[in-house]
Length: 310
Image (cartoon, rainbow, N blue to C red; front, side, top):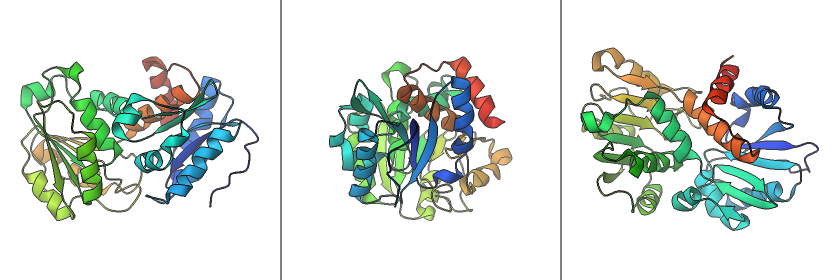
């Protein structure tokens, strides 16, 4: 059980699964010093898909405790939204569209919920996907996992701002049908220029078959949580990545077997393999900006990234 005693000092929370193992617990105090923030960080751990009352407890605690400033939410973004959305005074358009909350903040006495993943995942993708990649090469996108990250990436990749530089096909593969059906419902209004496919793949071997169907110059993303929140990979060691493709492991810590599988084929298949470091940086700085009501520009992002790396 988590401790919901009144916070004695201004506190920013991290709601996750194994928060004590995250670099942010050591990094945030250094960031707070650099940004001149008067706040400490505390983690709250929940098992994935925890009972709804657990999520309501933590949201009510943050809402009603004067020294609780807000929180970043990982893993539980969709479950927390479903369990506690009525407790928020404001939900941003992405939160309503995706049915998830990754940022909890307070403004003018109101409790605010935001979904920051479409912004942070977009910034991370822009860091390694070449300009006009989809327009020039016409590859596919395979998103392994049907959680909030995959929904956010789908929104970003099909955004109108990209005009004709969008994927022709996005496949979301998931081992449970409930989350897959939810993703299909939430993304039903996406730009019709992109073919959206939702595939039930209960085993890694099933994912291998879907992977084998992709064109060269595709993007393959591990958005399952396997490697960080739970051991393993969504693929088997016998998987075959499409040539000249981009492979993104969105985790930066843990036993990253998916990343190792891609790296073993990096030379023969001419793969670009990316980890989740930049995603980690943008994910946190987007929420910090919201919670502490301060703009964080690209120059400051670079400075904070260097602090974190050191």
